[in-house]
Length: 501
Ligand SMILES: *[C@@H]1O[C@H](CO)[C@@H](O)[C@H](O)[C@H]1NC(C)=O
Ligand SMILES: *[C@@H]1O[C@H](CO)[C@@H](O)[C@H](O)[C@H]1NC(C)=O
Ligand SMILES: *[C@@H]1O[C@H](CO)[C@@H](O)[C@H](O)[C@H]1NC(C)=O
Image 1 (tube, rainbow, N blue to C red):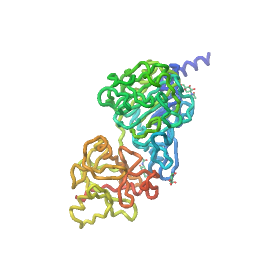
Image 2: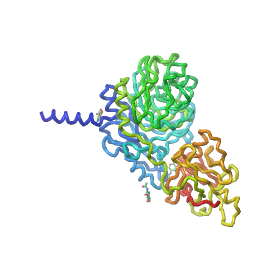
Image 3: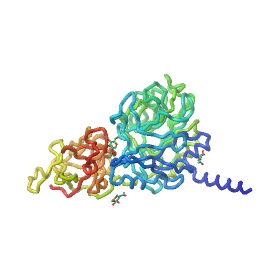
Image 4: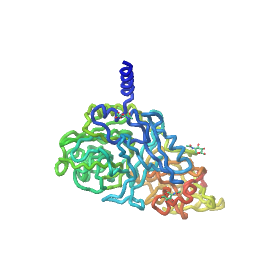
């Protein structure tokens, strides 16, 4: 009698707080991989969500939920990374199968930029959001950034059934191949049609296989050698351009049937964008290999960008009803875009500023430009108006994200500081998406404790840095000479003051 009462209470408590993987389990299609930097995906999960790697000493720490089954404890990251920079080095699998995601190795299409050919790791500050009123961090994937597990446990192979969902930032995407989450080749090579089954998000043209309606971005399926919105070759008008800030993207497949579904991750229900047979020519039956990737294509095509908050892969083909219950849980989790991308001393849009170096022995140098080129130089009070204007910048709302900033040249209105091939340059605003994003920087408290550091919005592992007199976007211990760890924290910290002119 007593044990029966205990059981009833436990079952009620479970139902009241079921997470996505509890819902999939009760639908008979359990998670075999569950990844999120923002929250536990099981109501009973209290293990690590992700690991961060600190630039100043290469130390790591795990970030866990605030409570069992709860949201991520971002304060652990903020405290650990204070006075340095951090990368997301592991995204842990919560399913108990050990399907963790780590830095992606080189593949058939591309070597990553690191000396060993591995892709970049994501900067840990790139994607702050609020979740149920708490600040947490997503995974901001810049081009050449990727995560992978080529030695998976229990992920669907061949034509076996599986389901996937992921929550992405609907406003962060590009056309490059391929911002994917899901099932891929175990050798990082293109081993042929049907060897992948991953969710894709972006404005790619499907490698000629089609798109959805409008100009995108679309939720599609990367099945290898093609992004599919439906059956090849089509532009599926029922696969809409996504306009919500947070998007739930759903993909599932079983023998000769698959479906794409999607919706706003903060409210409402899922819609079905495709549900039908497999494409011909190598996709029926499928030849899934069961590796897991995030942010890249199956052959490590690594030109894409996007933001990942949470996602899972299941064993078995989830019912629409199960997925609808998961969507209800995601909406209830309460994603909101109100977390600040900036910290430290604030500067006003419309004001004019100059940037002074804080590295010892160089503290009389300022960021100046001469034509397109940017350098550091002394600007004596006695210098002429030309030099003073070259060292002065008008603060604008970020051209690529208005929650951050852009810096317009005082002597060349319409031209802005941007990064190009990792160098900082001054170029006229051509109003392209790439220019606007590359000209957007987020201020944070100076990494060395002085002034401010200016983080690239589009490559948040990289900061304004002076190196041998020139300006770069640099990452601590990255592959380039200007990523040199020596003096990194000083070289990326600048005092922002009223402008010379
Ligand atoms: C957590 O919940 C899942 C299903 O929701 C279950 O399979 C698993 O055994 C539970 N783990 C523990 C440690 O209770
Ligand atoms: C951290 O590791 C990188 C790469 O292995 C190395 O280049 C760098 O010097 C290390 N930094 C410190 C502070 O040990
Ligand atoms: C970082 O450390 C500084 C100095 O110790 C402190 O003033 C600041 O509040 C800390 N910031 C965070 C986010 O913990």
